[in-house]
Amino acid sequence: MKPALTMNQAMAEAARCLLCHDAPCAAGCPASTAPDVFIRKLRFRNLKGAAKVIKERNVMGGVCAVVCPTCSLCAAGCTAAGLDEPIDIGALQRFIVEHAWEMGFSPLSAGKPNGLKVAIVGSGPAGLSCAAELARAGYQAMVFERLSAPGGMLRHAIPDHRLSPAFLERELEDIRALGVRFRLETAIRTQQDLDSLREQGFGAVFLATGAWRCATLDLPGRPREGVTDALTFLMGAKERPKELRHELAGKDVLVVGGGDTAMDAAVTASLAGARDVFILYRRSFAQMPGSPEEKTLAMDAGVHFMILTQPVGFETRGDRVTGLRVVRTRLGEPDSGGRRRPLPISGTEHSLPADLVVEAIGLSPDTSIREIRSLRTDEAGRIQVTAGQRAAADLPVFAGGDAVRGASVVAKAVCDGKAAAAAIRKELGR
Ligand SMILES: Cc1cc2nc3c(=O)[nH]c(=O)nc-3n(C[C@H](O)[C@H](O)[C@H](O)COP(=O)(O)OP(=O)(O)OC[C@H]3O[C@@H](n4cnc5c(N)ncnc54)[C@H](O)[C@@H]3O)c2cc1C
Image (cartoon, rainbow, N blue to C red; front, top):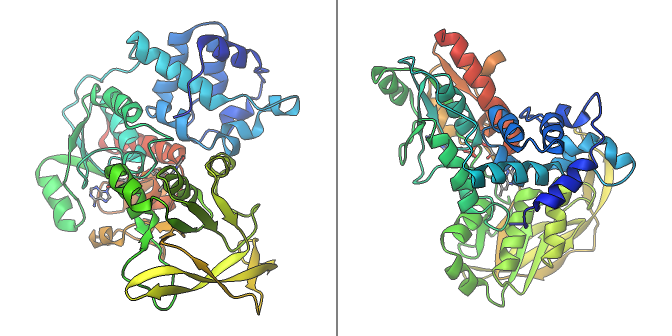
């Protein structure tokens, strides 16, 4: 991970804050972490007060400090940007949270037990923030997770060079200290599973199962070997880093896609020792959905960007990929989403050799959860909710995070987890 700020650096950065009366930074944080309030407290060296503000509003305040794309959230409206650089809100937030950990200061405590149990399905930031909010209100919060370790994308997909497992584990410790319990390797998918939870005395359920289904290239001649989706690649890199270094040494990798997942896959391949790593994107550099921070990381890691280039087929030898057949594109009229459409340029088709092709062209929610009665999903598999994150009208079932929004960001998952906890408390009357 990037080095943390020292006390002197943090105080100097906080001193640049203009303490705006209308605090655009606060309005830009989906998790309502109140950067205006915690920076003011830091300015007056009230470090415990600053840590309390962050953690009380956002139990994932440490992780958000590290991974949030701040330039499109809190720092987007920073008034200091008019004079100089925007305030590095993420770095200040991380400094405060880590300082509290070093001092052994825990701003949060469990509420007086109220005897009510809530089941949370999925241990990503949405599930964790819902569970922590409920535990603070005295509920027994049980998190059901199909995988063998909690954390969702934070643990299994975001690469260690951006979010270290030890940092995530420290934040999870704060949540466990509130009495939140985990039942790992336990999937909840069907109406029968929900009925069983009800029989076990759970009064409400929060579905926070994320978006784990990877889109694949719809091209002819897909080979069995040498093509993988980005999540499989990133999870493998975290679980078996040595094997990946061995597999990629001296090899060329093509990553198809232009979002944060594509950047993470490309940087991971580069750091694992691949010879050349290319990002292949069919629109322009400016249209790439990846955050500026992630694009910079990829450029720093030596990743090559092949923009305005679109794959049209696989090149293979036997069952193995040897590259992609691609065509150059130009930008045409805007599509329904307002982005200019990529149009193939005839006569520009050519081959790009590669030993591995990684598909990073989109994530959507897993559709298996549809088996729950009265739960509605749209054509993209996203669970439909009404106000207060309510997902099933005839059952106390709520939903949030990527399972509802589609692939999004951590701070929005935290926002949904908090909103669901508030709605569950209203529903159950405590
Ligand atoms: C490679 C990558 C990099 C990213 N980088 C960033 C970043 O830098 N900054 C940022 O803000 N966001 C980033 N994101 C997005 C962010 O990680 C997600 O928006 C966020 O994790 C969504 O939180 P969630 O709780 O909704 O779901 P998830 O984090 O996906 O967690 C869902 C959990 O539910 C579990 N689950 C699924 N189905 C079941 C079931 N039936 N029963 C039990 N458990 C189940 C899953 O195993 C998982 O643990 C990134 C995403 C990816 C893929």
